[in-house]
Image 1 (cartoon, helix red, strand yellow):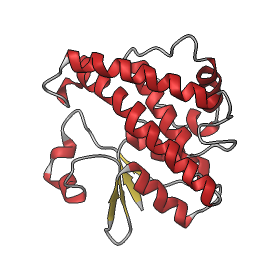
Image 2: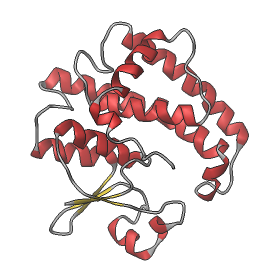
Image 3: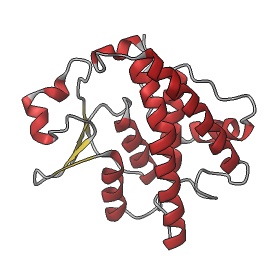
Amino acid sequence: MKIHGTPWGGNPRRVAIFLAEKGMDIPFVDVDLMGGEHRGEAFRALNPWELVPVLELDDGTCISETIAICRYIEELHPEPALFGRDPLERALVEMWQRRIELVLYAAVREVVRHSVPAIRVLEPVQLPEWAEVNRGRAARAIERLDGQLAASEFVAGSRYSVADITALFALEGSARAGIEIPGSCKHVERWLAQVRARPSSTSTLPPARG
């Protein structure tokens, strides 16, 4: 197996963190997004949607979409259970994973795509007004997440899960877009410091620039 996508860049890092939590090592193949490699014929043969990451199996089967890849890996290597251990826990992880991805991360993504100059190569028509609309949405989502973390150690309960990986990814993106965590969100700050310190997070950071 191999994963197409730079392991510290964008959604492939979510898979890299997931693999690190599992204690697994699957090789990554760098994809030059800024150079448009994902739009080339070779990559489109792997994923016509032109998105990373893509998990390529030994028989040539390709699985794209971050959560689909992580679910496949979880089925093969169920411990530690990052999607939940029983029906209730799995439902709660799924609920929070979707909330984070469809609300917080979606808003952060729009701010990044429409306000960060370096991203213009991926989003040629940037709409600053749309970025500002989503900046407010992201802030409100962070406040809601803070409410959950006031009563829970991790996003979906007492155990670290894939929902925490998505939330970390979203908040790292928010920092890049200049979205500050509201000062009242002390529980998010506590959680963020905790998950950033995990070996799976520190080992998948981009290499330091010389």
